[in-house]
Image (cartoon, rainbow, N blue to C red; front, side):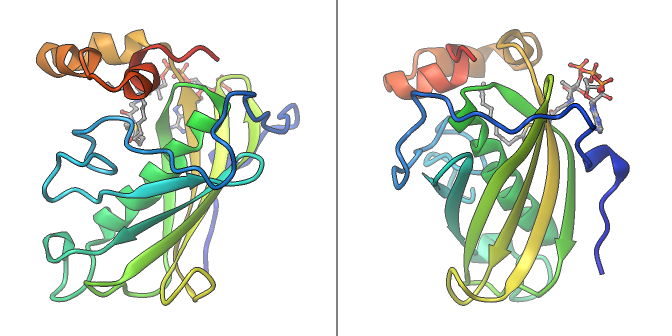
Length: 194
Ligand SMILES: CCCCCCCCCCCCCC(=O)SCCNC(=O)CCNC(=O)[C@H](O)C(C)(C)COP(=O)(O)OP(=O)(O)OC[C@H]1O[C@@H](n2cnc3c(N)ncnc32)[C@H](O)[C@@H]1OP(=O)(O)O
């Protein structure tokens, strides 16, 4: 049983997403966009350290291993952590469009429990774009990339200007991110041009 709210259905005028000419080639790892990101950053000891890889078109795959720090019920992944994995995977799609966007809405179906130690195999794609609105969906499978679906999500991301982060983020983290020695991460954080 699953449902999708009307807000996640692309409107009549929506168009197919266009892969940016400078998007990473299919098979290429995207790497963390920010080392302190709870979803993908390598400097977060209890973060998900999710690794996303570009796919064909506007799609990607990602993996994340459920750690003991990610439990809700004993021995099982917390639902919010699984939603984070889906959110991070869906958010990474925007790098293939070279669009800076934030999650406006995320709807998640939890289909199977996900035990600690499990590798969650995620797949995501952008389905449509309407102005600033980016529609996408993702699934997470367990037991292998072709295993049963444990979680799935649909999302609406909203394009924002770089100022969104500068206006709302804490100055010390903004300064630290701006001085990241990795030019690719600086670009993904602050210099993206659609
Ligand atoms: C420092 C590092 C930088 C990193 C960069 C890479 C980031 C990667 C991060 C990856 C991490 C993972 C990702 C994360 O975790 S991102 C973090 C979690 N998300 C947020 O913090 C977002 C918080 N929300 C906002 O800032 C604003 O509400 C936004 C910007 C989203 C919209 O406010 P804004 O004033 O700009 O726009 P608008 O209100 O005119 O709306 C525009 C259109 O959108 C429609 N709409 C809006 N909301 C919803 C909704 N909930 N359901 C359905 N529809 C919605 C709205 O009806 C309208 O439609 P239309 O009337 O045009 O038809």
